Image (cartoon, rainbow, N blue to C red; front, side, top):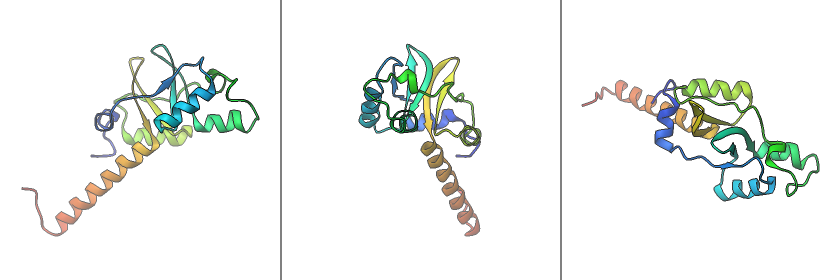
Length: 149
């Protein structure tokens, strides 16, 4: 495990399942799906095409704070677009920089126009913590004179 590991490696470990919603659905339906799936964002898909991303942040900023009704608004009216995404060959380090620079918490992984997974900031932080833990153990083994068999 390294910071220059590819997104593909993370997806193989965590799985590539994604949760999505149609742009024509109501925001209320999106909120129900977020709750049901226990996730912070949904990909907005028109067929197989990624057209946006809907996050809890979008709801708070574009519906709740402006006094709109989530039962009347469509997902397409509040989704974030264009979507910040990466390919499966991107590295963990590149993803962290992209999330920081674009101020986003979810990155769809898109190869050749097809969504192959999604990463959250939590996925990347967990990966980095695992990398650090492995490095610490290797250093401890080195200092203590333990060598791999």
